[in-house]
Length: 448
View 1 (tube, rainbow, N blue to C red):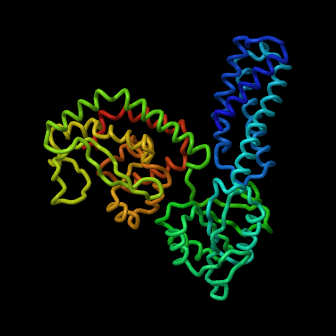
View 2 (view 1 turned 180 degrees about the horizontal axis):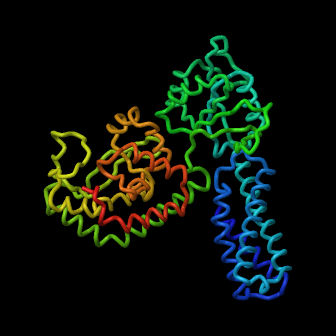
């Protein structure tokens, strides 16, 4: 979507120039203005949340957001032109035509994509399976609105309620199941994507208990506040199918963000593997000569949504190194690594094979570092919000690592930085982390 927005801005500027002057190509100063607008669009639209999931949002909402975002870009351009004293070099008629044509193209591209997604969802594509906790009036209202809006692509699997008189019954064709144990069973067996809490405000303790019970889960949790009779001032609430929704736990890797992240990962991983292939061959020879055994060390780690995968590294220890100790964290001064293996760890060259994991879609280049299942089981109850790091794919490098929280360091601080990354994810944030990683890679004191 970001590329379509940039295309709309550029195409709108070209069309406006042709309509105003009847010439082609653009004059140099107009080309600079269009290029600057395209760059501003990528930044400003992202700040306005234009690349978050718009599943279930009304057309009026989309129209409002597109208009506000584009007008903000124009305002920035006007301010820049005023400060640089270049406003007199541009035709005001061209600016007016550009404003209208680009606005129309942005609407056309967005609404066309939204309509395609709606048609796909009506046909059963791109659906999300949800469970509604609360079968009272609020929960029934939620279910009714979703059922009246099939274009949202939301399928209600069941209600969950504590009222024993409702358990086993059916409301609007949706089965009511009893208690949180059955919710946990549904999550394990029915491929549930989201849990919606439709409980009244007085049920605060109950809501906290449910969130505690779901603390090990990485699915999306939404709270539907019972606020239809209230007027909120200066408060931001998401809207899906006409319902006010508070997003309590949600991965940023939804919709276009997921595509952008995958494109970034695969493009950079393939490029790095091609450029680093001579170094990798040299590393492989060094590993084979340092001790008997395979070149690669395969270790089960946990990534997105808590799924295990085999992470690849150049082997830095003898094959039997963990036979007696079992799974342990690497610590300063340990002597398990071979001499060549210790060099690989110090320079982080042992991590290069993980770009193969990125190409396979098991990891990202940037994200929280993956942990072994035994440690995930250990830390998920000890570290608050530990499992939330799995809302995105595990990464080769991350915000925590470039800030010094690598290896045997404070795990609470590492999770704090991982969650900050998830909350503030953007393509530009990823690129910043990659650049900082390159600068830091050969002087990391916690690499051993």
